[in-house]
Length: 534
Image (tube, rainbow, N blue to C red):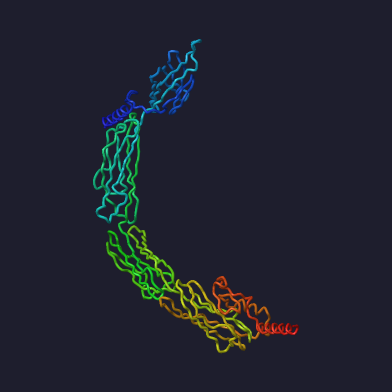
């Protein structure tokens, strides 16, 4: 046992002796300061050392000292081309001062030196530096493609430093991937300055992962310099691994249909992976402004074998509005063995729906009136589609009211995005209530697409207000149905352009009972008086 301990100590001592067993002549120097000019007494700092021109001699010697922390470590007189070298065994550093030029500048009259100078260069012990080249045959790998189931890695090392490297070791961290061929470590006995190793080949197996993942292949190089100091460098190559399972969902719909047509939707799903997947939840949604025609449930739970494709949904929809619409994505999800839930979405195709979209609305200023009051009813016909349409609208007058004036029908072409209106006035009867039936409109466009639409119904309450005050009347107006169109009583038809498209009722233009008859009397009287004067 004691012999083993002695042998170990001997090896340690031998290693320590080998690490430091070199002379200044063995050093590969690395220039630290290319040129520094020192006058008498000047100093320059380098790597923690102070180099000073202490003195000059007429025979062109310069007296140089190397000191640290105020303590002189070495000094000497140098001629041009001479070196002053110091090995700092305690710090593990080596330094050399080289005299490039010495100018003593002797005055011819006095024989004295006038501002002598020395130009010097300073060197430190060189160190190895490692440049690592690590390359893969691809940046992305898919385990589902058998021809790319392996990763080919090529590595090289170059000594980019200023000194030789000894006992160089290359090690590779494969990011958890299995090694198919090659070694994860390589040993190089030494590497000279600018020397490059041979190429090292390594083959790794593409892993099977649940989700797309970036993996870092890390190459590390370590080596020693002449003093036994360790030098190290690292390089990373990142590769992207595709998932082992991917659900591909495809949704198809017609690109364009007309308002009277139906859109057929087909959704298929494929397990584009290496493994079977069970308990897959698939959910779909219908497109906005469309109605589902089929009795189908858009939520299913399925299982898929590897490589299997099935048709998951097939249904028809009918549009309720024209325009461009994007289909919502169909979503499939499942819980993997690692406990995570993975979700996949289909494409979102767009569909163009063409045709007019006709709506009819009735409105009035107040639904509560007095007996014998006149009431204006406005009918608005709108085309909210993207095609012009010829529209015929007709209103029905209730039997228990009196028609006063106005128009009760419309027969016009309404352009896309525009509206037309007409109005009429009726007079209420006695106390009670009455109903204005829905207005009806039929339309047809240039594509022979036609249809019918009905409006809302208006309800009126006829109340004797002899016992009520103006505040009650104001309260009734606040609760009244507000007209969608503005326009005065003298205008039978109106459209959005005539009122700026505001869609609001102008209450200042309401008809006052008897006002027209009074105006006629005033006009006729004026004409009569003017005729007498003539």
